[in-house]
Image 1 (cartoon, helix red, strand yellow):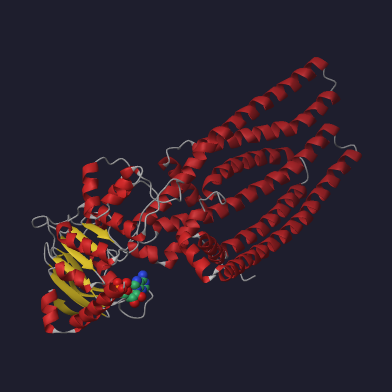
Image 2 (tube, protein in one colour):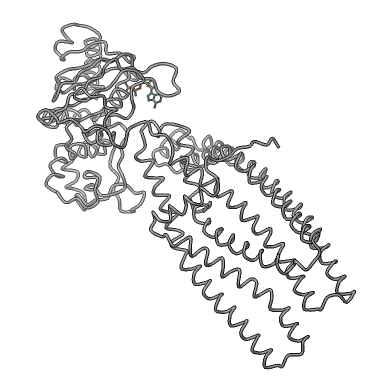
Amino acid sequence: MKRIKEKGKYNTFQNFMWMVKRSKISRVPYLLWISILSGILACIINVVGMLTTPMILDLLESGKSIAIFMQTISLVIGLLIVLTGVKTYLHFYMSIPKISCRTGIIESIAEKFSITSFPNVEDEKFLKLQEKASSASNNNSKATEDIWNKIEDLVRYSFSLLIYFVILTKLKWWILLLIIGTSVLEHTINRQIVQWQYNHRDEEATLFKRVMYFWRQSKDVGLGKDIRIFGMKSWLMDMFDDAIRTYEAFISKRERKYIWMNVLDLILSFLRNGVAYIYVAKLVVEGNLPASLFVLYIATIGNLTEQMLGIMDTCNTMNRYSMEINVVREYFDYKEQFRFEGGIKLPNAVDGKYEIELKNVSFRYPNNDTDTLHNINLRIAPGEKVAVVGLNGAGKTTLIRLISGFYDPTEGEVLLNGINIKEFNRREYYRLFSAVFQEFSILDATINDNITLEDDATNPERVWEVISKAGLEVKVKNLPDGLNTIIGKKIYENGVLLSGGEEQRLILARALYKDAPILLLDEPTAALDPIAENDIYHKYNSMTNGKTSVFISHRLASTRFCDRILLLDKGRIIEEGTHDSLILSDGEYAKLFYVQKKYYQKEAIHG
Ligand code: ADP
């Protein structure tokens, strides 16, 4: 095996301290202290239990009265019952705080993902890290929950070990050395396995991701239609099967390593116990050791080995947990490209309207070979309604992404009222925008909540107003629970499924509800039929009244309602003007317009 020395960014102690900090954030700061207390109790229970038999033998050997004998036994048993009771109680009492601490981390992981700089959510490295961080905190891994049990174990093993060393100091030094030596050897083997697993974690994550992808696809309702129509089942199942086989091959490779480790473990433990037991037995045979001490030494040797291995196993596990916690922390530390703290205050809008300017802006997506936008110079006056048109792939959506601050330009700058948007806190900057993007973000919740984006917002008049503007009034009125109707069936069985067009109208209603000074509409009618589309265009002026707006549309006719039209081609603005001026100049826009007009007329005749 090629040994790759890979270390996490933080060491085990730093990660442990981080967990202590997390327990405070989750409002369960006592986790550490109760874990230590449980460890001490476990140690006492262990040592008292081990001393009981030698003590009984000693009482018998020294001919103590039956009363003293009974008293001592009752005391020991009583003590064991009380201690075990307290320990069991602590164990149950602690289970919920441990879960709270872990779920707190899961929440923070989700939170980071939802507010991180947008380029991160398309960054493969970040996505992988997010997946690994999540699996380090999920139900199977439990690194972030079980670590408290390991603290308890560490305390128990350390204290017990100390006591056993004291008991065994009367024996020969080489016995102790043998026990320590073989235990350390076992520990070293264990570490190799942990290291192997850590070094292969990327491979495992990729293989697992593939399995999960096909699993999700096989259940995807949208894909379900294509599976039936195109007979995609066997193709999909073959790929799913292949993904499972590859993942299984990886797991069995890992399991083979575990088996070898177990065999070595067995050999070492035979060597250690065999030699030590023979030595103590020899002392008894030679008459140099009373029976009670013989029992004590045998029990201590067995226990010492257990504690030694226990402590080293716990260190191994802590080490593994630490590596998993490292991943979580690396994810939290992942570089943010945008400013999310401080920054200069947003400028005041002129009459509630903002001016946006793109100065010599070029943009290239990470890992792409060419620029998607080339040297764009564009000034959108306060309150201006700009339309962006162009063929697929021209860069229209990318332009909106730069304006809305989802990406920063590779060259040039985006200015808001003359100030580079990098100077603002990006989250505050986002507040200036309302948007309809091409991907719909509708959650399985009520219509009201999906529009207001709050779960206790009560302003039905305004909600109805935007629903009506977005042309969804009749539909919502006919739903059984009106505004309180639940959308989607992923959580609630009685949820309602909306058509693509209705979802788009819902998103439009949400954008209007936010009532932000800048409105961005990226193909807001792509999922609507021509009549519904026309209806939205006619409402466009009232929707954008008093706002600066940018509107992307594939329907050139729809852009007549805008003050200015930009024609984008291969990442460049090649024409701009009003609809009439562009038609008059008889350039590319006019060509596209007539082609489209003919097409739509044909559709109207044949449709
Ligand atoms: P339009 O909206 O005009 O159809 P886009 O702005 O969506 O065009 O895309 C312009 C170009 O940028 C396309 O060639 C597309 O492949 C590329 N592109 C879009 N999004 C990404 C992305 N996230 N990563 C890499 N390339 C992208």
